[in-house]
Amino acid sequence: MPQTYAIDVDALAAKYRELQGDAHPDRHSGADEAAKMRAVQLTSLINEGFATLKSPLKRAGYLLSLEGFDAEQVSQADLSMDLLMEQMQLRESLESLPKDESALDELADLKSDTEQKIAKRQQEFEVALTSNDLSDARRLFHEMQFLDKLLQEINSGEEQRLGY
Image 1 (tube, rainbow, N blue to C red):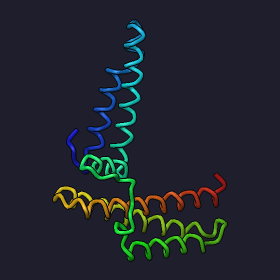
Image 2 (spheres, rainbow, N blue to C red; image 1 turned 120 degrees about the vertical axis):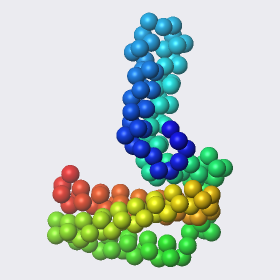
Image 3 (cartoon, rainbow, N blue to C red; image 1 turned 45 degrees about the horizontal axis):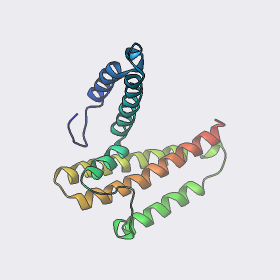
Image 4 (cartoon, helix red, strand yellow; image 1 turned 180 degrees about the vertical axis):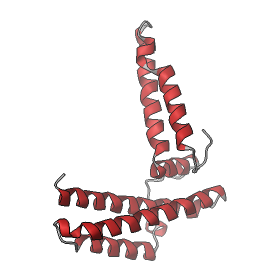
């Protein structure tokens, strides 16, 4: 797969199936124990790689790590005051919603808005990474992390209100 943020998910899935087919432990059932263990380890590595590349957020973190950045290390310099204020406002909006089904429409609106913000940050991340503006790419990655966490909280709120 090319080392870029924008990937063809169908091509990724096809490559994953191909690699899994070649490495699957069942294909090595007649081999010695060391070969079987290598097949299990390789299958695990292929699964981990697929999960990383399939997720836009994990893929962004991985690409930053290839550039020498510890994507999980966040300093205050990486976070703008605008981002922090936006996050506070979004979280307050989420927390102020009623805890019953009457909040589902507002949750849907908040979810849609958050998904649009994530999509915008992903596009900006791709541009920053392509133009080798790694500082901006890192900032955008942290913004995507915040928004992804908010989206998870929104989904959890929907599930709770629907009794899942």
